[in-house]
Length: 217
Image 1 (cartoon, one colour):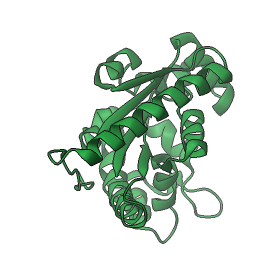
Image 2 (cartoon, rainbow, N blue to C red):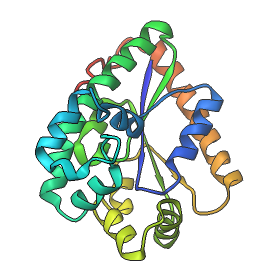
Image 3 (cartoon, rainbow, N blue to C red):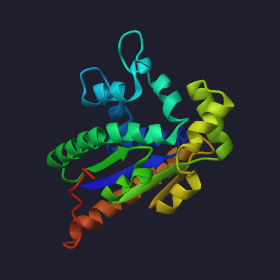
Image 4 (tube, one colour):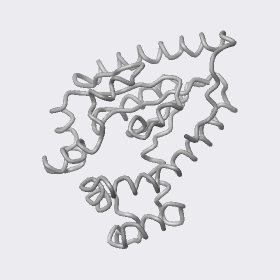
C-alpha cells in the first residue's frame, strides 16, 4: 500500500484535490473531519478541551463551538499548541486504525490522508509521498474570507497561524497549484495520480522498498 500525505494552507483547494483523488480510486480520510469527531460530547478530547478552555467554548446544545474555540487559539500560539496537544494524538490514533484497515482490505491501495498541519507537526514523515496544494496568496485570502465569512484581519490571522505556503513546497514530492480553474486543477491532480500509481507498482516490484507501517507518530 502506498501512503500519501495531502496538505496545504487553509483555503488553498486541498479538499477539491482530495475529492478528485477519491474519484480516481484513492482511499482518503480527512483529518479535519476526524478532529471534529473526536471533540464531540462523549469523545476523548471533549472533556479535556472544556477543562483547558472553559465552558464558554460550548454552544447552546453543549457541543464545542469551533468558531469560539478558533477565536481563542488563532490569536494565541500557546493556546493553539495546547489545543493541538489534546486533539492531534486522538486524530493520529484514528488515522493509524484507518490505514491498517485499508491495508488489510486492499494491499495495493493508494491511501491518502488529508491534513493541513502535517508538515508543522512532523507527521508528514509517516508517508511515502507528499502532495502540497497551494495557490496565490491573494486568492487564498479571498477564498477564506468568502468560505468562512471572516473579516480580512481574521482571515489573515488564520493564514499566519500556519506555515507559509512557499515553505511547505520545499517538502513536496508533488505540487498542485489551484490558482486557475477547476479544470486545470483536475488535470494536475490526474497527472499526480498516474505518477502515484507508477510509484506503487514500482515499489511492489522492489524487494528493498521500505515498509512504513508506523502511522502513530
